Image (tube, rainbow, N blue to C red; front, side, top):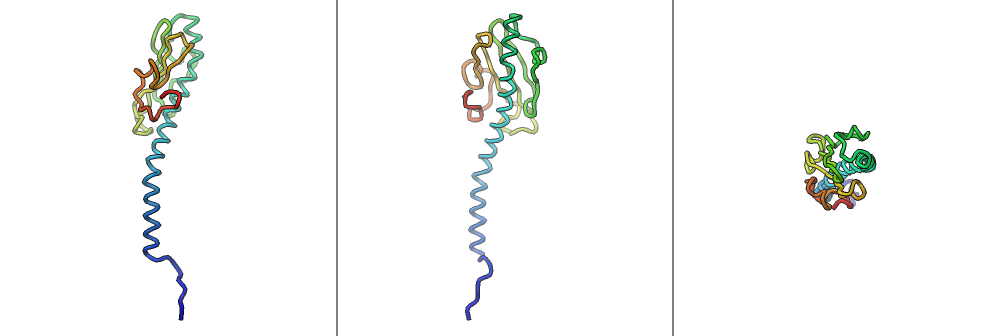
Length: 147
């Protein structure tokens, strides 16, 4: 008499578990990089939003404002701890410092910078040009325009 198999054998289950483990081992680091890049994009978004008001302030006053609040900008975000302005004359640097808790360890406490030496007509960000001195986030986590 022939009996019908009603379930999976132990070896079949072990193979499935091994395949799932391999997929998880590949997916988790990829997801970690994705979250770090998303958090850095917030820093870029907040600093990019300051470019026009900062250029207008520099054109009107000939100097960089004392704080982000002076030009109506946002100085913090969900992942960004502070944004600081510095410079003088035709040069300005905007530096966003990432938070140390609640962010990916690859970007925790690190900085993202944007710099202009032309009173806001042209900007460098991340690892590009003069902004490289104020950015210490790994280039692989920066947005494409800032690598």
